[in-house]
Image (tube, rainbow, N blue to C red):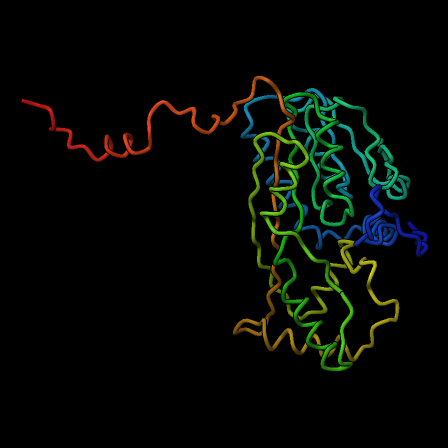
Length: 313
C-alpha cells in the first residue's frame, strides 16, 4: 500500500510550545511500516502485548469498555478483544494512519482524543507516548476519558534506549564535520513519567522499567529494524540534508568498536517504561494524612526490638 509523503507542516501544542516531534513525518513513517509489516521487526510490540496481557490478568476485575490508543498496529486491540477481561474494545489512531487501516478504527485529529468524558473503563497505549509532543496533555485527556476507577496501562521507550546508536552517530558526525545534528529521540526517564502521571490526576500511579538488550550483526541491521518499526528520526530539529554514506560507515565502525561482544555482534538497548494509573474514585485506597498515625515510629521500633521473653515471670 503506497503512502503519501508528508509536508513539512508541524503541529504545535495548545500552549504553543515548540514541538519536539514532527508528527506528520512520524505518522507517515508509521503508515509505511504498517503497510510493509515486517514480522521480524515486531519483537518489541509482541513482547509489550504479552506483558500487557500479564499485567491486565493481575487486575482482579473486568472492564465494560476498553480502548487501544495510538498503538500503530492492531496487536493490542486484538489482545484486548480476545481477553475475557474486556467486553467491548475501541481502537484509536491518528487520522492519516487510521485511513490506511482495515477494520473499525476511530481517527484522531493529531493528539486530540476523539472520546467523550467518562466513556471508558480501560485505556491502553503501547509505544506511542514517546513520540507525542504534549504528553501531559494527552495523559489528562486519557484520565478524563476514563470513568471513576477506570484504569490506564501503557508503555513507552525510556531513557537509555538506543544509547549506543546515539553515541556512535554523535562521535562519527563530530569527527567528520565538527558538529552533529540530533538523530535519536531524547527519551524521558522513569521519575519524569511518574511525575507526569501525578500531574495528570491519576490515582495510585505505578511506573517501572523493562530493559532489553538486543544483539545484531551490524549497526545497519539495527537501523533496518528501526525503519521497519517506523521509528527512524522524526525530530523537528533534524537536518534535512541527506546523511552521507561516509557518516554511517564511520558510525558503524565506532559502534562495533565500543559496543560489540566477543563474537563481534553489537548490542542495542531498549528500555521500556511501563506506567499505570487509575481515574480517581471515592472507593479507592488513599494514603493517610501526615500526622494521623496513632503510634509513633519510635514506639513501633522499640516494640519490634523487644525480647519476646520480657515481661514474663
